[in-house]
Every structure is written in C-alpha cells, then in structure tokens.
Image (cartoon, rainbow, N blue to C red; front, side, top):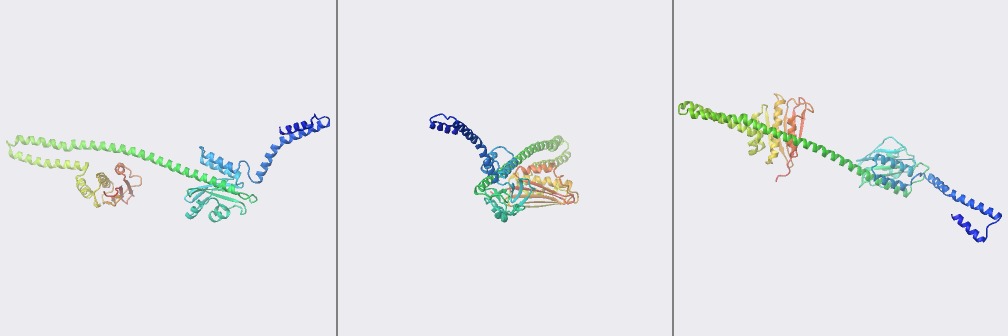
Length: 437
C-alpha cells in the first residue's frame, strides 16, 4: 500500500499521465517494488531463524520456556511429564548438547530425566556439600569441579555447562543441568537468570510434591487408625457384653445357688430345733461352713470384676496376691513411686494377669514367671517374662493379646510381645503417665 501511494505522488508531481516509455518504466518499477515487499517478510523470518540456529536456539526463547513452565505448573500435569517437558525446553533453548534434572533429598540425588537420554546416576553429598549447594544460585565448570565433580564426568573440558540447584528455603531438592558443545557460545547473564528462575520454580514444585506425599501418607495413616479404632471399639463393647453375661452366669450358678441352699437349711433348722436340738446344732455348723463358702464365692467374683487389693493397696499387693493362683514359680518386682489413676492400674493389672495365665497354659511345667512393674516421671512400664517353650513369630496374636492391646490403646499405651521357640516369652507394655499432680 505504501508503494502504491508513493507512485501516486510521483504521478501527481508530473501533473500528467505517463505516456510511451514512461508508462512501461513506471509499471515495471511498481511490479518490482510489490514483489520486493511480498518477499521481504519470509526473507526476514528465514534470516531470524538462521541467526537463532547460529546461537544454538531453536523454537521458543528462554523467556518463553520459563513462562510455559510456570503455566504448566498451574495445571494438573503429571510431575514426570512436567520434568520431561522442562528438559526438552531447556535443550531447545539453553543447552543444545543436553539437559537433565536430578531429584532427591537428604543429600542423595538421582538423575530423574535427561535429553538426550543418559543412564541413571546417583550423587551423594555430605552435610556441608548439601548446605553449600542448596544455597548456591548457579554454578559453572570451576564451581562444579569443587562441589559437584560427578556432573562433569564425560563432559568436554572446554564446553560451557551450567548447574542451577533447585532448593526451597535452603533445602536442596534437585539440580538443573544444561550443557553446550565446545564450539557453542558461553552462557549470558540472561541465560543464567532464566535458569535460576526455572530452578526456583522446580524447587517449589518438588517441595509441594513432598508436602502432598506427606499429606497423603498422613491421610492413609489416619484412615488405618480410624479402622483400627472402630474395630477396637467393637471388641471392647463385645468384651463388655461377654463380661456382663459371665457375671450373670456366675451369680446364678454360684452365689445364688449357695444362697438357695442356705435358705433351705435355715428352714430345716427352724423346724427341728425344738424336736432334735443336737441335729439342729449339726445343721447350724454346716450353715456356718456354707456361709464361709458363699462369702469366698462373692469375694472371688468381686476379685474378677475389680480386685479389692488393687483398689486399696495398689499394684504391688495386687500382683503378689496372684501367687496363689499361679501353678508355676512366680516372682514379682514392683517399684512405683506413687499410686496412679484407677484406669492405669487396672489396665496394668489385667494385662499382667492375662500374660500370667497365658504363661501358665503354654510355657510348660518347668518354666518360671517374673513380673516387673517400674515407672519414671513420664512412662509406666511392665513386663511378664517366662523361660518356657515360647512360640514362633506371628502366632502371638490371639484373643488375649488383642484384649491387652485394646486395654492399653484405650489409655494411650503400647503392647510388645517377644518370643522365640525354646527361649521363652516376654510381654511388655508402656503407658504414658506424665508428671505427678
């Protein structure tokens, strides 16, 4: 359009229409000018492309690579695919001889992706090296020779190379490495700036990925604990129902029958006391013995619900009183600085009792049992050990061990079972108690 306007001005300046040879020359010049204009734009593109090829840059510019990586980070692109796209962009814009990304934590880095593809590698950094590299913005061959010499293996000595640590708050999470051929141009300040910014974004992405992984692991742990809690609650409710039924049965079949017998004998004694005083005296003597048996039955029943010795005197006396119900040699070592809440003492007592009963059933006739209960300012610990037959790994997960685990878990405690065949069994428990009030 500009060419046509110029020629219109020329014609107006002549103040007449071109004639003869003037017309032919004018038309030919207009055609030549239009042809030059049409060819100028493609020629410009070709010249620009040729200049970029001389500089080793094809396709997008480093700034475009930086912007496109930031845009891809905001989308739901798989991280491995994101790193591959980044490396391809780095090779196309900054490192025609190759680009790679290393990822890792705690000073152990692995070559995650590289273009052209290279075999997997590993770099181990000391705490000092990790600190220095994590705080470095960008490094060249000389710096790499001191702190990351492994990255220079196989790289021509005279070829330009750059490494930009990907870190977050000084914590080294990865490395960006770009390489050029020996005949290539050296890196400019703008190249370094782009590489530093890319490394910063990669460090942020790696940090976010670690947070996401930790969050997923925490959620999975919470899910498992929730399932365990639900199962534990169900077992506790079931056990409580079973205990109530057992108490009802013991009352009906034991104590209640004793009371019925006493009632019948008292009725007989009342009938015969006037007619046969001697027989009545014998019957009263039997009643005295029956009352003692009934009292013992009630005492035994109460002991199974909550032992009076535990309530009145604590774990030491309660555990020593178990001796009369144990058929194996039995030792008790209780050293506690004070009394503890009822739920803690009850959990320890019944867990020890369960472990003692298990030892009496399975340890063998020649075994002995030792009970130890100690505490410091933060934790109460107990153990029940025997030197009997033991059991194979994986078999100590019966109903009794589940009950003990549930009892301790309800107050924040933990249960541990250690056993080997012919080497005995140890059941240990730990309960947090905190400082004394």
